[in-house]
Amino acid sequence: MTDLRPLIEHPDLPALLDDIRQRADDFEAQRHLDQDIIERFKDLGVYRAFVPKRFGGDERSPTDFLRLIEAIAMADGSAAWVASFGMNPFYLGGLPLETIDKLWADTPDVVFAAAIFPVAPAKVVDDHYVMSGRWKFASGCMGASLIGVGIKPDTDGSLPRIAVMPADQVTIDETWDMIGMRATGSHDVVVNDVNVPSEWTLIRGGKLNLTEPLFNYPSLSLAAQVLAVTTLGMAREALQIITAEAAGRKSVTGAPNIGEREYVQIAIGKAEAQMHASKAFFYEATDDAWATIVEGGTPSDEQINQLRLSTSHLTHTCADVVKTVYKLMGMTSAENSHAMTRIYRDASLVGQHAFMGEVTFRNAGAMAFGHEPYPGYL
Picture 1: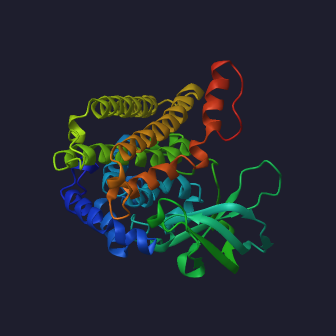
Picture 2: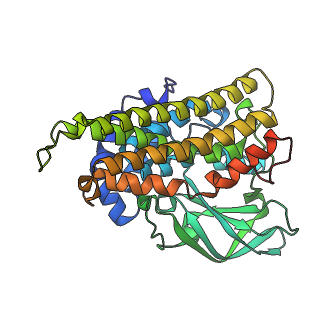
């Protein structure tokens, strides 16, 4: 019988996090997680968290899943980023029901990666899409069993279609070479004349064919949340690192220990407050939307706005907390062998994602004045 205690209370989680923390530098160097970590994510319930119970899944709440990703990010941001795609039923649920029956027929622990952009035109032959092209940023593709790629819509301004295919029909070109989140393996994927039956395609951001209340949760908001919450885990880890290391650090000049310096104490006090405030806003917005769904309703535009705003606020606030710690630790944190160097790079990258860009704040501000946000926000 499935153990439905909160995911962060899973008995295997502490050992997994310890292992990830110890191997994080190796993962970063090779630019992907080892397959045994993906398998342990499966055992933990990462990939069945949002799968309906009728298919053998757990139907977890958004907060339950987000807190797990937050915890994994304390061990390694990249590992959490890869695990975050356990929200894939919010994509794959757009497949026809007959296909969904096949999708989870053997196991609910399906690992899916998608590279949607740049969308590419596809030939339509009989009832198939013939796919060829190159797509970027397929996070987690090295451990995925299914990969989706974006099809250019027939009409400008329409939502793109995603073609889903077995990973062995895709060539992974290991191009991912960014300043941070290097172990996510967000490489290019290349497809040459692969026939994808129309029933294995879906509209990205379109209506889902799963009827469980869970899938009334705004899917694009969740897609942003699962990525943003990695910065919260990294900020928590950064604050733990500076306080843990302070006791053992002596200044070569004879100045007070870093933890005894008033400017450091003030900065860390402010950072703690900023992190916890952004965390409270983030989970409050999440729980508010979820309560509406549990009561049989659908989140309002304003609730979705709060989800998006709190998500971007969390990302940038927690990245600033990491930056504060990094600067306070001086040359020690600049060593490539020090965990703070990787955390600083990883946290900096999250804010570059389009989901958490400055346009989010513009959209929220526009709604405050009664104006419409840009398409794709709500």
